[in-house]
Length: 447
Ligand code: 5AD
Ligand code: SF4
Image 1 (tube, rainbow, N blue to C red):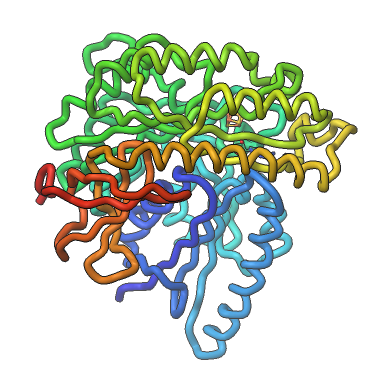
Image 2: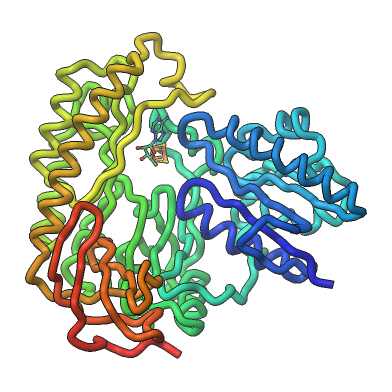
């Protein structure tokens, strides 16, 4: 009998990738994935621990699920609950203590064990880091992806930025073998992907022996992937400035499939704060990397992450961040108030910045980034670009797709446009989207 599986995914794209793999791992046990939790036999919370009260959110969600579990039991059924992801890794035994009704807890490198754990005694916790074993256990037949698919190539982090919990929750840097990645990408394209986004906490630290035996870095892998017939767009995220090597920069000039958009977090524009964050480069080093990237690909649009209110951040530090944003010019950016993560070095620094100061700095930084984003979107008006249609719009006959620069573009088109790549004339540019008019399909969707 098929059982209903619901996975609630929090956080980053890698969790989205992991949730899809979890569903594939559970399918042989008769679980069919469902978008809604109503009537589910198994609910998996795939959690994130990067900022704010992530763990508390998980405990309150677990409280709600417990009620459902009781209701199901009263009706003679059973609802099983599992917790995966980075909160599972950080809080494993604590979750079992506070929520003993949970059937299993699995960390990001041990989730391949979930099917066996569910078949065994309840209450098991798996938080080891067997990354290679996990990838080897994943299904060889991925479920049909959207036109744009994710592919985890690298996982974990050895950088130990002093604010960040990732090195503790995802473990140390691990690169998947090139041959496995080429095979997975080929399978994705065969079942309908036209765009593949390579994922990794330090994706540009990916390295390994190529099928030719030579040592490959990410630039070489991108070139090999670009040679796969039918793979029309490539992206990669998230990168660290220290790992932006010459070959990867050259790939931006030489590989037409590599989209002219790069998410390259800098976190702060103050050298003092960058040092305290253990980022291991200064603000000018970041500016120089951007210059080299733009020399290779003048059309490159940039995105970044910023943290305001890192402990000890002064007004002068904050102004240095605003100056860097003005110098670089971003097409979009994500910005966050610093949030102390238990177990990280920065959490113990005494000079924490008061919340009202963080609020004011965040508002100022976001206003600047919003102006840059609007200017970038408006500058696209009058241009023609390929848009990869990925979901229906609000009105019938309306579609939303992604530009090469990751903007959402709204167009009118026929009912069968899902997954098409269409040449689009940009008519309007707004804060968060573009409006386009389509001349004709650039190429037909893969079957
Ligand atoms: N507080 C605030 N933001 C954080 N990030 C990571 N850790 C923290 C933290 N403790 C942000 C960084 C990172 C992004 C994924 O989340 O900007 O690049
Ligand atoms: Fe966290 Fe820094 Fe590693 Fe990025 S590079 S995952 S911010 S420790």
